[in-house]
Image 1 (cartoon, rainbow, N blue to C red):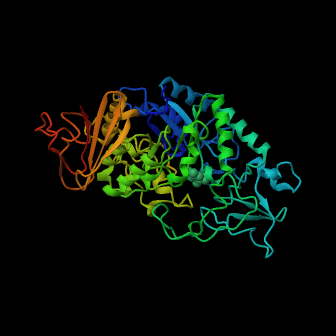
Image 2 (image 1 turned 90 degrees about the horizontal axis):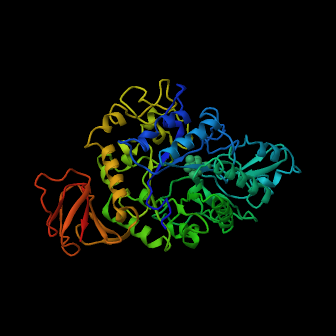
Image 3 (image 1 turned 180 degrees about the vertical axis):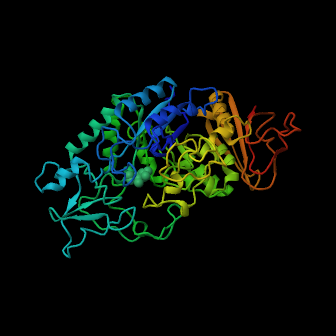
Length: 529
Ligand code: BGC
C-alpha cells in the first residue's frame, strides 16, 4: 500500500505573506481559506496534495513565529482556533491535507514555561531548558556559537546562570533530557492532531539535544562542497557537540510514537548532508521521520554536473524503502528564480516535479516570484530573509491582491508576475506547474516510479527513466542555453510525448528516438516502450 504522501506534491504556505483578509497588511488564516481554490478544489487549481503551514502560534515574532509563546493556540494576528478548525475542514473538503510546523527545540523567551524556568533555580520548570554556570572567567559556559551569530549562551541576571539558544537569544533551548518537558510537547502535538491535522513539519530537529558535558566545538575544517563557509561565527566551528547528537534520534522516535497514534506524517527539517540525514529515516521511514528535507538540489548550482550530482546523491544515499523529498525554495532561502535566473524557473520546476520524491513548492514559485531587492526591505528579519518572504502576488494591483492595507513587507513585482495574469494563459509558468502536476496524477511512473539516470547523452542534458508497473517514462532536460540533440534509441523503440516545458514543436510528428531535439532549457517527459 502506498502511503498518501508518496507521490504527493506539497506546498509551503508562509501565513504572514499568503493572503490578508482584514486589511492589517499581515496574512491570516481567513485569507488562506479564501485562496484555497488556488491550491486545490477548483477546475484551474494548482492541484497540490498537501500544505505545510509555517507557524501561526502566539509569538512575539522575533523569528516570525519560530519563537513560540504558546504551542496550543493561534496568534490573534493570524486569527483564532475556530479559524484554524475551519481551515482544516476546508482543506479536507478539497482533498487537501494540512501539516503544521512543530518547533520542538526552543520556545520564545516569552513562553510561560521560560518565565517559570528563569524565575529561580528551584522552579519545577528550571530543568525544562538548558542552563549552565558561567565559565571561570565569568563568560559563557563554552564556545558554542548561534546560527544567527554571537555566542549560543545568554547570561540571565535573575539566577546568574547562562541559558543556551541555538538561534536568537529570544529562543531559549528546550531540554529534551527532561521527561516532563517532552510530555508537554507531545501533548501539544496531540492537541493539534486531535483537531484533524495530518502531520507536522518538524523544525531544526538537529538542535534538539546538546552534549551533557558541554564540550567546546573544534574550529571548522576546510570549506566543503556542502556548507560553503559563510564567514560567520556559526560556520567557523564544527558543531559536533551542539547539533546532531545521537540522543536526537530518541527525541524523534518519541515524536514518531505520538504521530503514529494518529497515523500522522512527520517531515524533518534537516540541514545536513544526506550521509547524516539517512539516519533520521531509520527503519525504512517507519521508526523516525517518514520524510526529511533533502536540500541537495537546493544547494546545487545550475550546471548539469552539479544538478546530476545532487540527483545521484539523493538516489544513492536515501536508505532503501524511504521516499526522498526535493525543494528549490523556502522561507529561509533565496528564491530559486533569483538564484538560477527567472528564465530558468520553468526548467527548474520541470526537474523538481519529475524526480523521484516528494516535491515541496514554496508559495509564489509557481508564478516565478523572485527575491525582492534587499535595499527595498525594512530589515524586519535580522537574518536578512525578508527578500524571499514578500507577499504573494495574486494580481497586478499595488497590494497584489494580498492586502487592501499596507503590506508588512513591500511586494516584489506584482505588475510583472501574478496569479491573475497567468491563470488563464496556457503558456504561463502557473499553467505549466498545473499541467505537470496533473501529468503526475495520470502517470504512476512519474508519481511513485523508480529512477534510473542516463549519462553520456550531451554535456548539457539531464536524463533519467521513471518506471512503475509496465509504464516507463523517459525524462530529458537540456539545462544549457543552446539546443541539443539526443540519441535515445538505446532506451526506446518509440516515444510518445506526455508533457514538456515548451509547446510541442510545429514540426512535431512521431518523434524519432535516434534524434530528439531539445531547445535551450527544454524538458520533455516521453512515454517509451
Ligand atoms: C526555520 C527558520 C527559523 C529556525 C529557528 C528553521 O528551521 O525554518 O525560519 O529561523 O528554524 O526556528
